[in-house]
View 1: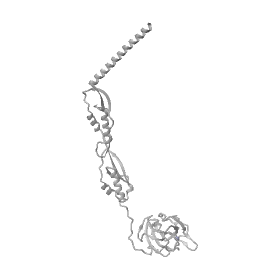
View 2: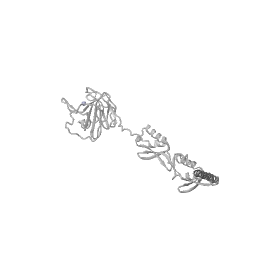
View 3: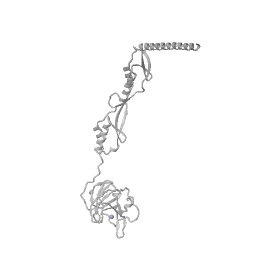
View 4: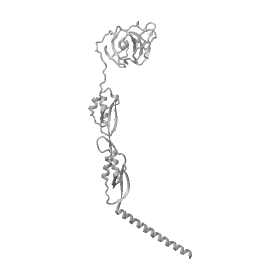
Length: 340
Ligand SMILES: [Zn+2]
């Protein structure tokens, strides 16, 4: 009996507690409803520590600001807009009739934005020359200069610029005509008819050779006119003295000028065959003999590396090769002191 009454007592207690819990829940719901009837959850907005007002829809305002900052304001060349910081939001409950001013807050915030303009600057040799609005414009200018074979094309570069003020843009035509630089034309000495006589005295003979191993300084540097196998070196060959260097190469192989200079002989010689003599500074001359073809005439200025003739086997020759001579004031030097 004792036990049963204890259980009954426990059940009664439980029922009382349950009733209390239900009552509390109802009270909470009533209070919250009453609050929401008069008040609504709102956000205060502050920006750089300054209170701006209340906003109805925090998400909307923030996404409008984000859009403005990343896409610019629709103005030409605006790359992005920088604002000092993002607004801070704090939730609060306000009476329903409180004035929210989303639009005004948005405008206040974007007014502080600084626009960054994007454009392109065309540089010449590291110096700013012209500004253009788009990358396409800049590439257009460079392409036109390339087409015109402007001499300074390698010194022209483009830089992407971001600036808080918009630059003045030049038209493509202005840029092209302002930057174009004509290539220097080779100096052409008045061409004179082909002659079989060298201007600077007679064609060097085998009597006039530097037989010592002393290397005479040329004061200029030479490049190899062709590449190929050396078939006969300079110097005593037993029965005769070889005044040059023979380099074998197929007929028609282009021969390059060893250095820049003026053509002083271009013609046929019974022994040298088709011969070109180029006179350089310091009394230096180079001879290109046995050619199948001569590309330049007497009086022409040739630059180092320019193709001036083609390998052949004309004159006193038994196979296609270049007979190359280097003479200083008429005296034949060993070409291998300078080349090959
Ligand atoms: Zn030879």
